[in-house]
Image (tube, rainbow, N blue to C red; front, side, top):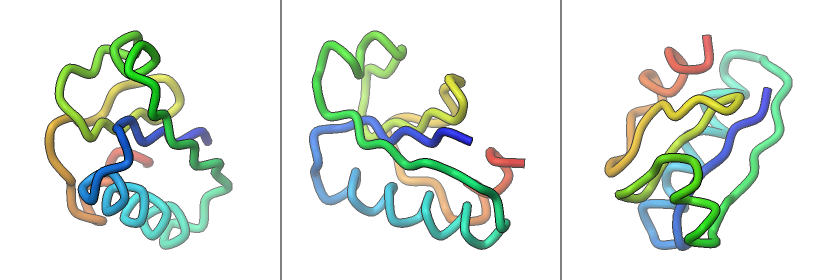
Length: 76
C-alpha cells in the first residue's frame, strides 16, 4: 500500500504523516509512506488545500488532519 502525504512540510503535514504511519501500523498492513512537497506534484494529485492524504493513488482527504481511526477507515 502506498500512502502519500501532500504538503509543504508544515506542522499539520508532519502530524498527518505521523497519524498515517500509526494507522497503518495499527492495522498491520504493509505500506510505504511518501511525503510529496513539490507544489506541481501536489496539484497534479487534485489537492488544492494541504495537507492531503492519498492512498494507492486515490485522494482520501485534504485541508485537515483526520484522526487515526478515520485514516484506518481509509486504509481498509
